[in-house]
Length: 154
Image (tube, rainbow, N blue to C red; front, top):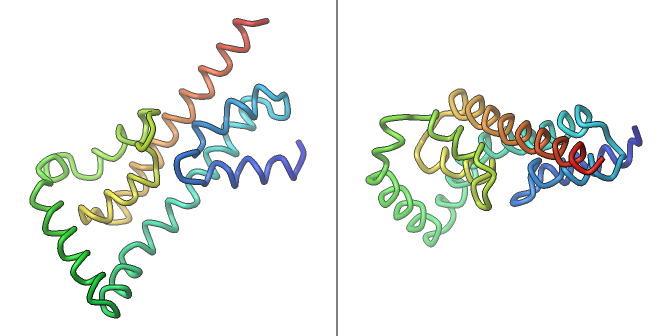
């Protein structure tokens, strides 16, 4: 396995809107990676920013709100608006994040789930495993679909 290509796969899997679901198929189809290698690297690259985002979104919002009246008004508005519409999250909690991430549609990835966890006040210890499980499901589905496509053309 080429180290440069592996790093590129990890980094591209960590980007918002791209994530593992859009990096695994080209990695496999190019022949640079086996399906297990592409899956593992894509999954890892997708999980790393989740940890960072879940740990930093709240401190950054507090920092911004304390130093800017604009951000203080924005975060007050955001929390008041979203938390009054949080019946689904109150009922299902962090588990609602897993299918949200697992469905491979645009704007339903791990980055958006981190923002939802932050806005709805889901704690790190609950959000991380459910978001990671969603990434796992999406990456597995993408990998298996890609393997099926390769088998269908052979």
